[in-house]
Structures are given as C-alpha cells and as structure tokens.
Amino acid sequence: MGVRCVAIRACGGVLQRALSLHTAHATKDMENLFQLVRNIVPALTSKKHKGQDGRIGIVGGCQEYTGAPYFAGISALKVGADLTHVFCAREAAPVIKSYSPELIVHPVLDSSNAVEEVEKWLPRLHALVVGPGLGRDDLLLNNVRGILESTKARDIPVVIDADGLWLVAQQPALIHSYHKAILTPNHVEFSRLWEAVLSSPMDSNDLKGSTLKLSQALGNITVVQKGEQDLISNGQQVLVCNQEGSSRRCGGQGDLLSGSLGVMVHWALRAGPEKTNGSSPLLVAAWGACTLTRECNRQAFQKYGRSTTTTDMITEVGTAFSRLFTT
Ligand SMILES: NC(=O)C1=CN([C@@H]2O[C@H](COP(=O)(O)OP(=O)(O)OC[C@H]3O[C@@H](n4cnc5c(N)ncnc54)[C@H](OP(=O)(O)O)[C@@H]3O)[C@@H](O)[C@H]2O)[C@@H](O)CC1
Ligand SMILES: Nc1ncnc2c1ncn2[C@@H]1O[C@H](COP(=O)(O)OP(=O)(O)OP(=O)(O)O)[C@@H](O)[C@H]1O
Ligand SMILES: [Mg+2]
Picture 1 (tube, rainbow, N blue to C red):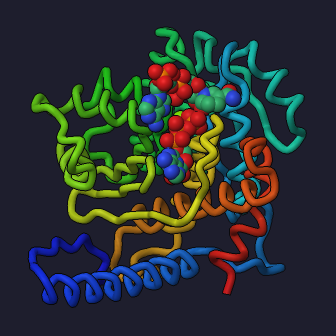
Picture 2: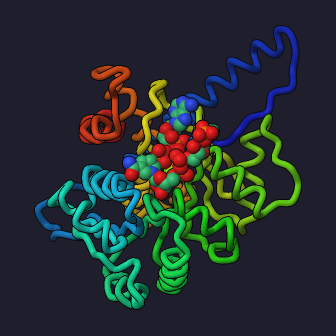
C-alpha cells in the first residue's frame, strides 16, 4: 500500500504541480485507509456468540478519576465489542458501576494480589487498554507493571494511554519492542516519553519525524501522537489523520480514542495482513480509531457547540461509525 509522507522540494509552477500530485496521492492514500478499516470490521452474523467480536479489558480508575475508565469502556462497547471488563481501585468500582450497567467492574487494582486477580481474566481478553484514570499512586503503578508483564507473556495487544504512559516513561523497557503495543500520548505525554527515551531535545517543528523517531527508539512499537493532526508511526512509516473534528477540547476525548482502539486493534489483528493489504494491522486500527474519534467530535459539536462533552461524543459513535466505515 502506498501510504506514506511525501516531502516536496520544488518551486514555482513545478511546486504547483507537485502540490496537486501530492494532494492526489494524499486523497488516494486516505481512500485506501478507509477501505482497509472497512476490511477489518467484522460482519454481524447470526453464527457468532457473545464475546467473539471483542472482550476488552480496561485497566484504570482510582479515587480521583472514575470518568476516564468509564469513557474508554463504554466507547469500546459502542464501537462493537461484546464485553468490557474494568479493573480499577476498590473505591472507584461502585462509582463506575453506577454510571453504567453495561460494564463489568472488578475492584482489584489496589489489592495485594491484583496481578493474580487480573491474570484470571487475561486468557479470555482480546485486548487491554491500560491507563485511563489510573492515577500515579506507586502501589497501583507497581501492580500495573506486573499486569503488563503478564499481558506481554500472553501476546495480548495492549493500548497504553494517560497514566499508563507515565509508567512507561519511568520504565521504557517494560514495553520496548513489544510488537502488539500501541501508545496514545497527547502533547504533554509525548514530550515526557521523548525526554525519557531520547536524550536529544525534541524538534517541535517536525512532529512527524519525532513520532517516527520515538517509535524507533521504543523498538518500533506503534505510537499515536494526538493533536491538531494525529500522527501514527510504527518506526517505518507515518500515517496522518486529519479528519475534521472541531475546536472543542473537553476532557475525555482521548479516553474515547483509547477504548475504541482497544476493539479495533483486536479486529485488525484477527483480520490479518491479507485484509490490511500487507499494512501493519496496528497502524490501520489506530488510524481508524483516530478518524472515528474526530468524527464523533465533529458530529457532537454540530449539535451542541460549546456545550459539547465527551458523553455527547459517545452518543455519536454509532452514526459516526456507520458514516465512515459501513459500506
Ligand atoms: N473525567 C475524567 O475522569 C477524566 C480523567 N482523565 C484522567 O486524568 C488523569 C491525568 O490526565 P492528563 O495527564 O491528561 O492530565 P491533565 O490534567 O488533563 O493534563 C495535565 C496538564 O497537561 C497540560 N496539557 C494537557 N494536554 C495538553 C495539550 N494537548 N497541549 C498542551 N498542554 C496540555 C495541561 O497543562 P496546563 O494547561 O494546565 O498548563 C494539563 O493541566 C489521567 O488518568 C486521565 O486518564 C482524563 O482522561 C480526562 C477525563
Ligand atoms: N488541536 C486539535 N484539533 C483537532 N483535534 C484534536 C486536537 N487536539 C486533539 N484532538 C483530538 O482529540 C482527541 C483526543 O486528543 P487529546 O490530545 O485531547 O487527548 P487527551 O489529552 O489524552 O484527552 P483526555 O482528556 O481524554 O485525557 C484525538 O482524537 C485528537 O485527534
Ligand atoms: Mg488522556
């Protein structure tokens, strides 16, 4: 597949032609990507049983942050997962349960046997989303370190976001070269990771190059740098997602993205390289989840303008998904 970043060096009329060529390439690349995402979406048939289209685990939720794991978990379900398990600190569990009867909530993350408690469920999970609303308490982070080790040992795909990225910045070796990991840093989280992993200063004029380099420095794991454009790299190529969103930046949009990505990475890996036309399934899943999140934002903003919140965006998941990915 010809998805790539094109550097243009030309001037005058040549530049004009080069730019139209570039635009034509970019449009074609984007059409290709839409098709690849459509290819990984599982068919809805009467032959499947509950669970087959995704059992997703969310690791996060503490006393302060209960919204983030809820947003991630409910987004995974709304995108099309069948079951979502939230593994959180004891105090957060009743709160998260009260938001929604759809989520299965395990109050285990701050217990002394947290790793074993999560390990009981790991063999049944298709993907894990680690970090939304996790907080930075050392006890919890240490338990999550053990959960990540166990997840890797079982070859389960893992999306790492928010405070999960804080942990990775402390211990990059935890995730280095794990080919089924996707990191989803916002601007601040990206800079923190950069400083932890590379000693040179980050070039903020070359965000694409920085995304590529950070991925390489982490052993070619997939990195999604969120922002005005989302930049997605596996150390070999950089995809750009600039789907129209809005200027509304309410908290929780990143949680919608990480939860959606949890399901889509499972779908992409299950579909295999034939369906993704040889492209990395993780890149395709990441581009799909970014595009979906931004479209939810656009649709919600059209209705609610400045009062748009992440809950409004989640309401849009179904229509946004159909509009983008259902043929
Ligand atoms: N409802 C809930 O439960 C939610 C809970 N959440 C959970 O909160 C936990 C902490 O998350 P987080 O690290 O994102 O902390 P957050 O205080 O947002 O940022 C730290 C500081 O960084 C800055 N900053 C941030 N983004 C920036 C940008 N793009 N570009 C530039 N600067 C930017 C900004 O600095 P300031 O503007 O204040 O100087 C901000 O104060 C984590 O567990 C997460 O999952 C969230 O998911 C939201 C919904
Ligand atoms: N300046 C921007 N313009 C358009 N879309 C943006 C912009 N910044 C972020 N986004 C989109 O918002 C979504 C979440 O990114 P953001 O950087 O807000 O994550 P976050 O800070 O982790 O969010 P959260 O509040 O959930 O922690 C992504 O899909 C991203 O594409
Ligand atoms: Mg975040």
